[in-house]
Image 1 (cartoon, rainbow, N blue to C red):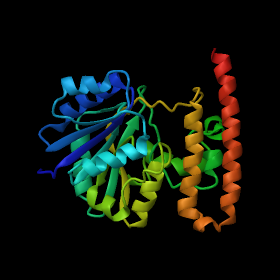
Image 2: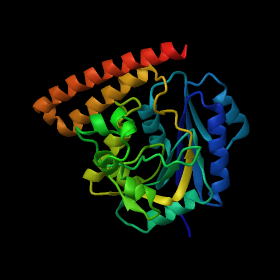
Image 3: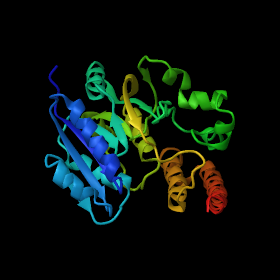
Image 4: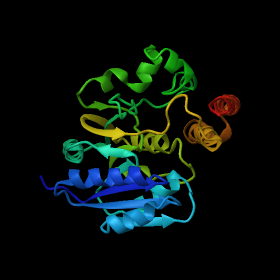
Length: 295
């Protein structure tokens, strides 16, 4: 099957070994598919850009002197890319055999498909559950990595939000949004919905994009037959950076304001802001305690 030009887009920051494994898996999996690989280095100091330049001369690399955030970086390389299909990959992903071909074949079979994601697996083989329903107020308690979801993972609210039944099966299924860790996006759908919003930093940029994509009447799917390994850094119980905690909650408020805020007139906006502020304070306090214990 002939494929339109595919652009593979990777943003990396101090992940030299990870991005090397990622690129190697891409080169093995392309199998003659016409593609370009774009990497944006977000200010790495571990030799990542030098390694890419020396080992992979066909990779189009952009190097920033400082970390400006995931969302601005994604927006930049989207604007620099040429493909009719855009495959977003985190630098700590590894494609399993046939992943790219399976994604493109499924995507081209559905004319209103705007995006399709592979099934992401932890390094131990567990499904990461990143194909979800759009977030609502209940996700403050029943999100993917909240305390209640970890204590009671089988509760119906968490399972509905994470589409657990569908993700545990092998058939393709529709969802509201997926993580930018690994997803194939049709450029025409991206143009209609609007590109990546660079006002986000890291968190919630994907939820915002797919909210707009679905609002433009494009479908979002997960294709479990295509799989990746994702050495996800955001694991439960790890000591998180205070910057990451603050960015998560700022991003959540920005998302809520954009899509439910009615330009500041919705009274729930102020309730959400207060709740997110309190939740951030609590997580920062817990994080400090974990850090002191680890030390």
